[in-house]
View (spheres, rainbow, N blue to C red):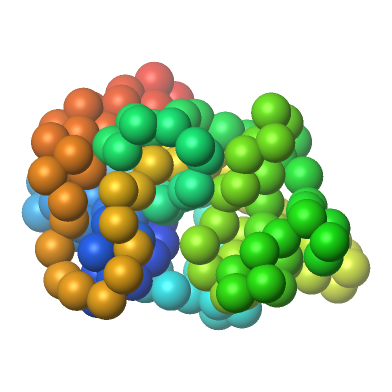
Length: 168
């Protein structure tokens, strides 16, 4: 089975870079056969191409969920829904994912929700997906993770590794 661990985000915007950091850390490790880690950055629509050709993708990304900074939650695409235009903040992304409990999901202007909707509209077959959302403390301009998100990295990396090893 070919499996991708895909870190998303912008490391120049504080905790938004958590997915990239996880992917970088995992890329330096010996992963199970058939598993690769990739820093997808703020992929936007390029995410469609990054998802292509994999049987399974584990995505790690900062997610505004109203939780404690550094807390992370496992989702599947069916656990999230698109937020209507009237539901989003005026300065935020054009569309955002929310968890089934109503929490916002993506911090990117063209996020996972748009990519999933576009893939569906284009009739593309997507791989099986698991998403780990990490609650950021700060997403303003500036490099480096907050102390809370940095402290969560070992547990987050361990759970992502369990996710892929459990499938091998």
